[in-house]
Image (cartoon, rainbow, N blue to C red; front, top):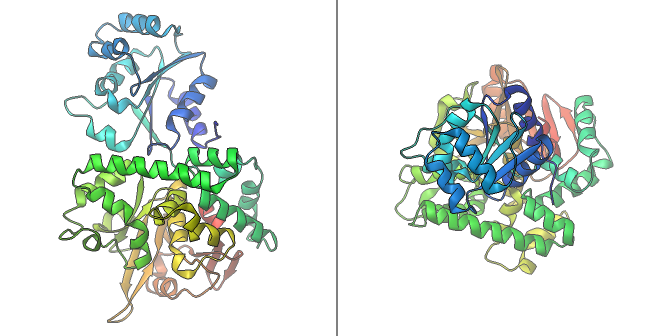
Length: 441
């Protein structure tokens, strides 16, 4: 099934504004829907297109990239081999999984300069970085990132084009939703269980069966585990990934590498973690030592929290060692009986929603007394001010860490948010925001 994705509009903007001056590179995790989106775009927006999938390509086409000194001959051969006619400024050539053929990526520089056709590439950031030895990296690229489907895209997939637009208007009006809030929370819980991976959403729509959805998500997790074992043959990446739910449960203020892998710490696995981040299978929130605008300038690369890029996958990963029928998270979420000690699911969800909305992920801790610390779950910037965010899995309005942070850094703050499971409110300078509105901050 082909789903409506927000990135489509940005791709169209690239086509209309750049007019062949750059190639378009779509990066994202595996199985996030890059190939499907690009093929749909090529089919709708061009007279003809040639799709070259480097994961499944004939030797004749692959060998064309060994020598592109004569572009007239190159294009002639390409049209003969594919049986597709190319039209100047009306056709696009798609390089799918371009990381598998580095020479094709290098050729982008010369193909773009030639100017006859448009070019779109897809690949994961990790493999794009790894497979660039001995080639010239093209600077003639416009890069866009495709994330798992966000809540609005999920609404679109289930046939609802209205609700999320109404949420925007309600947030602008600063009005509680009252009885509608319960329905929106039910929608959110369904989104959390299914997740935003297109194959999982497709499985839900076709079967209306969460067990089938869970099976699809397990396939994706196993694929990612295989990828991580390729990144690091010692298995450290795979271990770090599998331990994410347990690490968030521990509420330790950072990912404790030593508790997952014996005799290892954040510095020793820094390269592995960087590769994991580049795969876009995980999201990292970095601790900032001095919370102010320009958050990346004071981030500590060895102190971070790690989240799964898709909360649907996170839920399956949390109980990966159990059969679906034993997965209590499914039943608890569906019945709205999620225990407080399972509230880390909401923290993972908020991280995903903030990132999809265009925010980098940062957090901050500071001492409360000799034995305890305050922690602000997320920090985002707006203009020249900060917006601290605390996440609660319940409806309680207690927020000592948020209050302490606002008191300490009051001159740097624009708005403070408590993201929780109850209705919208604005009291005493704090905005109480339902989780489903996170992407609208």
